[in-house]
Length: 216
Image 1 (cartoon, helix red, strand yellow):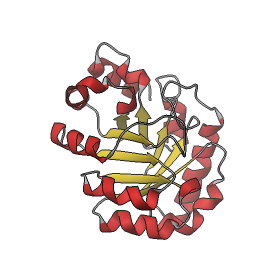
Image 2 (cartoon, rainbow, N blue to C red):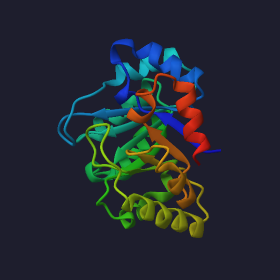
Image 3 (cartoon, rainbow, N blue to C red):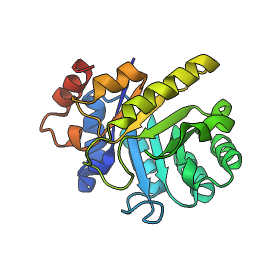
Image 4 (spheres, rainbow, N blue to C red):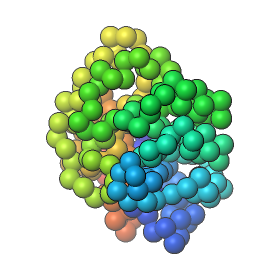
């Protein structure tokens, strides 16, 4: 089943626990936590304490996406705080195997994220370690950006590569996912859809998630 992961980057952060509970009750499969440090990408968002808050608010998987320039230091902290998945950006991972190993040792499932202009070929040496691959559908930093259409073709290329290698690694799309883009992404091989402003801007979260599922 396709997983839908609302991104709390677009939530009412003054009511974070309530927002997470509401999305859980509305049928979300995962909660997505976008962590930005103001260095790797513009904007400053959450620290590990947010994972602790989220963990108390829901029992569904917490998916942390670290857009930070020092993933070796911070990735284990988010894992220890209670994240189920911790993904770091390949572009910032100078010691990729060491970082992924630190996530595993801290008790989470490791993932790698790549920017829209990063080649899929750079993932080759770490595929056997990964439990999630995050393809950015926008440039990292802010929610609500328009979807980059080339993401769909990139998703298909990655899906075909994983299939040939016999690897069942979930492909997550982060950025620009709406009921207008989701179906093509799933057809191309995406299995986890992160949606922020599209879901949180709705007055009815359950209806928004249902409509997104029905668009697939």
